[in-house]
Length: 237
Ligand code: 5RP
Image (cartoon, rainbow, N blue to C red; front, side, top):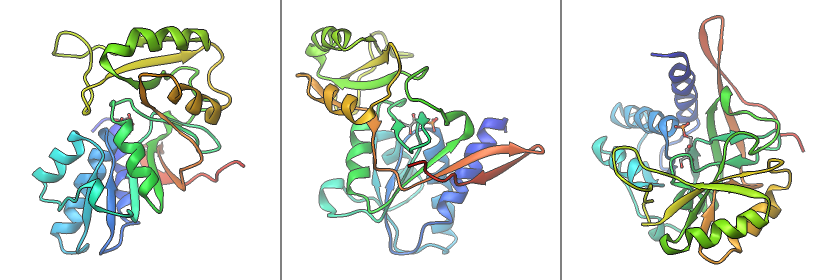
């Protein structure tokens, strides 16, 4: 296992140690969340965790949970989720996030907002001092609006590109059937709440990957003396 996967596996396992029987769990998306879902399945099938129900944040997490026989319930049929566990692409010292590297941020945000607690699991390469200096902000747009949205983002000093698919000609199509613009602002994002709201106000935008003032706890995996270790940084206020 490469070093980054070792860090991801360590945080994924640490996150599952925070899960208790009878919980409704938000199941995040991405490679770290997938390791967390596998670890959850092990605990369920060994009998350590009972009566767990998962709410998927994407087709990816839904398919994986089904393959691993984790009971699922639909987002619309739950009034609240006890704990959502998800990965992130960037985490700043105030626990503001960029998500959506896997184009799943719409459902991830819906699940996060319904959760009593949002636990973010990352390896230490995801920690940044300031958001959007290098990782572009994913913005989900209606298919026939992407050009128009791109022009408005340009007026906001952001350059964007339409995310293209691998192993399929043309753009990435999201779980909702929309497209993704990846946006870099000239000076990065210093005011995440303002940018989150400003982008969502553009006609044709469904949702963007800024998760602001919603993360309760972050678990970080790093390598120390050739071994993966996990720590939980304090949020800077
Ligand atoms: C998907 C996400 C993922 O959580 C994020 O991209 C991190 O993924 P990974 O754990 O593979 O680095 O937001 O939309």
